Length: 111
Image 1 (cartoon, one colour):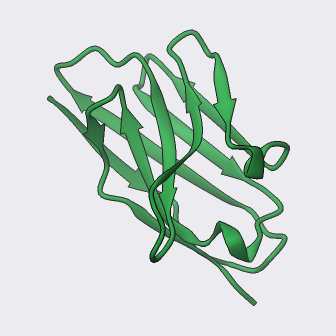
Image 2 (tube, rainbow, N blue to C red):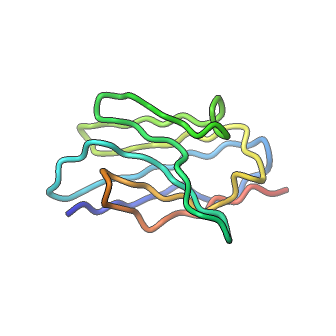
């Protein structure tokens, strides 16, 4: 089993920045970690993922604005979000491997 705890969400004005963090604990070896988001009435979509070796993949909508990073020794994954837009408003979820999800953290971009 893997437990994931996210932090760092909140309210920010358009153009602002936020940093999300996720800490993983448990007995399973973690290969891929990532961030997903779900806006009201929409499906949950991938934002960014990172492999244990550091390979990354981003949704087109966040390329150039968001950066994902991880610390394998600490089992953490962060998402630095810059130049935030109102359409980035969603609940952001941390994911580990293909099975494990965090509880989600709300990000609201509004003036």
